[in-house]
Image (cartoon, rainbow, N blue to C red):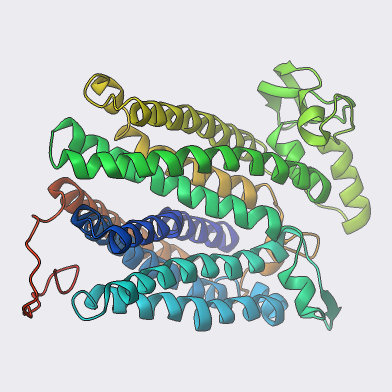
Length: 464
């Protein structure tokens, strides 16, 4: 019944569920736009049917993302009112811009795209989905600008116990955003690529619309291999940035209790949390220094030294994150990343050799791999947020000081149970709808005529 613990659980559950939908929105919107662009340029009806099929799944995902994201706005005011009071002048600006500019733009033109079939010219209709894709990724920019301030505060001053913005340009050019935004967007493209690969492989195996789904598979294979490769390189750069700005998170991700130079990389570490020391470990010498500094030597500070420094700087308290969570989250994220890299290479091989029939056994793995980017995304954000413990805004305000003072444990417990029940229903509805339309395949091909067609209501709006 501890209000802080319940508030954290509530925000964690709603945020993780919401972030299931965000990466697919970022990546699939662009892929659908590319499909429609190819249709406009070539006049090939297969690409129009591809656009409608994948666009239908995109819309289900988008709708659920909107519904789950709204809840977070209320939690800032109700469960984390002290945080909102402290950060409102800074946090509110990018969130307002995101809602008024990016979200309205993508919502408006998504409506134009849904109901614009046969009402707009082909070029204008394709432009609408491109605006949706651009606005979706622009929305991510502003959300991540707000989050980057929480990771690396810049452009602010403390006045009367509140953080006040002093430099908007510094806020939007926060060094952290240049690592975090590419990582998020590339994760979105990777998620979309494996989503398309998995569903396409399912239909190819069943010889259902094989030509259409082979084209989808080829496109997703190219997007996947490029995205995963760039994601790995960007993740390496982001990790080096993390060593500089949040050394405690780096140490927690490696269960590194004592400072090392050169520092070793942990394959497996068992620790005694009560004594704050390592009990058993399997480590690769010098590898952590190499990953951190691109050389075989370099000091990586340990949790105990950093704890002592933080106590001297910020006062008594526990500044060490719950080590097991960031430690395993990092390994899940990286392990799945390399698994997807290998799978993307296999997808390219199947595409280049046109070996869909000869290597049908390999195709059977791709529907299972749809889950891989979702798990990796969740693990990545868990590392990002839990590794910052006990800070909400790094170095400025802690979780304990951010929670609402008037919200009781009973209130939070009731609302937490309510959210779990509602979100369970949403999970069922989402899986049901996506599975239904994904397994059904594209709508049958139709013959285009110049005669006006009375639009028929459907999930996609007017049909061609």
